[in-house]
Image 1 (cartoon, rainbow, N blue to C red):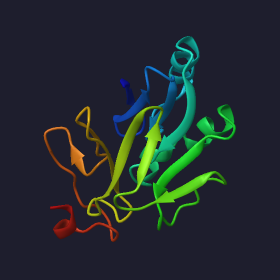
Image 2: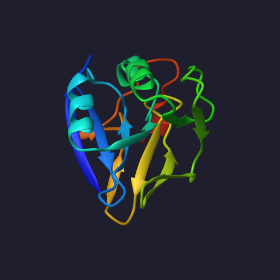
Image 3: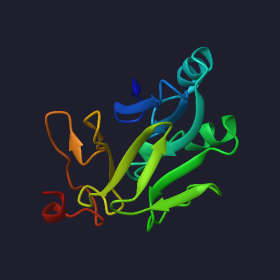
Length: 155
């Protein structure tokens, strides 16, 4: 599995492009960064983008979702099954312990409410990879910022 990190967007977010080295099937984790450089990287490396993994639906994490949907027709969007947001016609709701495959790599969905009530983490056990969104920030835990946050659940 390969991972390319992109930083930027509304709140200096991270957006990840992940792909299977064998099949070149790829996914975006949180479309939160202006996508033109990501599109170029995908095209230059022959990655077949088929999925988008949403860690939660705060605007800064899904701000460029429509750009990816328009660029990659048929891309499947994964997010929490009970989200209040409309994430497109190709949305597939997932819940705790569901699986999402990216080529030969399988991610386990972990429901992690707290920062927001639709937070998910995506864990790939074999390579020890965990995408946390805002459940965990760099160097600290996430924070609670609105009525859909819960500090007890976060911890």
